Amino acid sequence: MAFRDILEIEVVAGNGGDGAMSFHRAKYMPKGGSDGGHGGKGGTVYLRAVNNVTSLEDLVGQRKYRAAHGRYGEGRLRNGADGPDLIIDVPVGTTAFDVASGQVIADLIEVGQIKRVAKSGIGGRGNSAFVNAVRQAPRFAEQGSIGERRKIRLELRLIADVGLVGYPNAGKSSLLAALSRANPEIAAYPFTTLAPILGVVERGDLDTFQRFTLADIPGIIEGASLGKGLGLEFLRHISRTRLLIYVVAADGDPRVTLKALQGELEAYDPRLLESAALIALNKIDLLEPDEIEMVTEELQGFGLPIVPISALEGIGLTQIRDALFEMMPDRELWAQTHSLEEMSEEVRIERMTIELVVEGEERTWVVRGGPFEARLARFKRHLNDAVDYLQTVFKREGLYSGLARAGAKPGDNVRIGDFIFEYFTDD
Image (tube, rainbow, N blue to C red; front, top):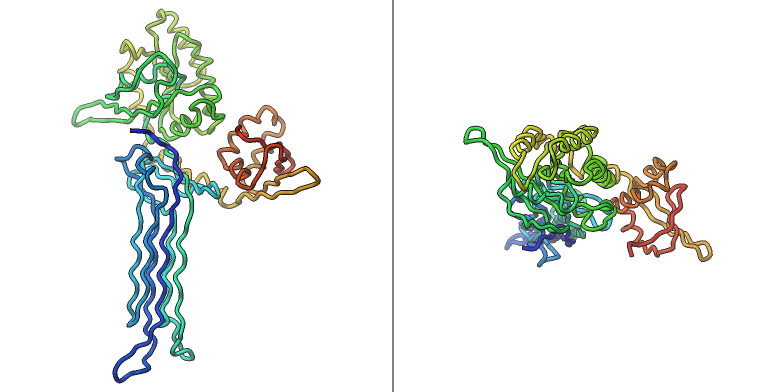
């Protein structure tokens, strides 16, 4: 089955039903009082995280999801029925962004979690609701309100307990196959793994049974944080794992490799370096014992546990399995500190605005609000060196997409506070 981890859809909540304008009529009461019932509320659109869907591919055939409208009110004080809610099942780990604002509106990191993404319209009140001492027979009723309509971008960020971090051909797929029951494609060329593959690692008997999921994600390359290769896809998924395994080949330069890997993770999201992690020094079957000891000593400066292994020969697998079980962070505590909805609160408070100022032939887009000016100020002394990093951050936080929607063209100026840049596209 195809693996899809990004998808845009439109969600439309139901309109509220109109209230009724009605008057009671009976054989001996030709001019009865107002008896118009209220309209029902429309259906709300929700996203629900489920565990039996592993890709957004199931949603591809339908790009618009519309909840039912509320029914109209009727005479004799009969209220209209509410429109049923619409629940869209998505894989656990899905984040929903509002396309217009770039804000996170749902971050589903637990099975069964439900979040509203389009609010229903409210039912209108019938004329019976407007009767008072002066207005005893109102000849009007209230219309239902319109349900919310919005385009949302769904991004699947794979939920796994442990993620494998490493360059292509570092041996990640071999380690996954050796530790779990997964059967990934293994070959001696880059990017064998083009979509995340999950395996299950187990230990213990009936009384002491333990398990965790292990994810092999497409290999990282230099420049991954800037979107090169499969970089952003890789980093988006690795951000969900509770524990990281840096897989480095012992027959290369492990210290330089590990430093580069951590640099890519830090450029994408500095919090990734705070994750629990260990180093799997792979392919030790290619080294002599004294060489293994020397390489291990070189890696100790990173302050992480080091487990020498050979996924191909089965060396060190018991040791790394036990270390992973012992180091695994508590799931509930991890979930409490990794919600993207909480991360986006500051952006919600100060929304970004973009205004075009034209002076002669020069066009300047003035950006206000959002986190951009504060971020630039922190890199003022080393701005030239930080340009690549800031470009990645601003792209992730919606600046580029906001400028594109506003109509910016390559060569236009962009002003953020005291800083002025030239706008360009990925092309």
